[in-house]
Length: 196
Image (tube, rainbow, N blue to C red):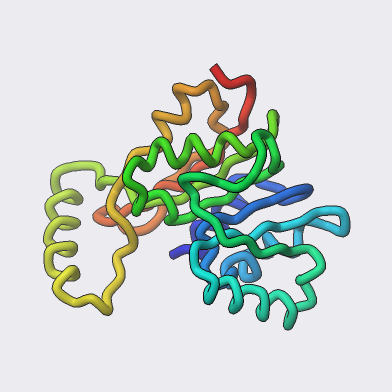
């Protein structure tokens, strides 16, 4: 689902990943390669791959070397709640499934927005609540069964992030729900203007 979410962000969301780009909670960066996001930065661009896990970043770096993308990628250990970058640093910030484990997902999203340059883009994908009583009931049944089997991953808990970002004066560029209606994911792109 992470690859589908990033494809939706980069293709349907019309994000052109040029300049300075960061992917947060990037795991092994497989999705960056599969979606073509790492290849789109161009000769003068740079993709920063951030994750809490050194092991995951080591795998991502080996993947980048094997695909001859290591010249345009850098690997940083870091925490989404406290990004080690200046304000207005990146042209594009991508985050898929990294907000749901945060104690305050909206505060986490605002930290991501902090490092987006004026006129830059923040693209996120995360679990949201189902719409409608039947989808909600079915989703609750599926989740209550699935959590008894740790090998089944349903993603993250549902969180509502977009309203908090919109209150800060960003412009909504793109929004779509993907996945089954009983376990939906929201994919959106916002453009940063002047913060209120």
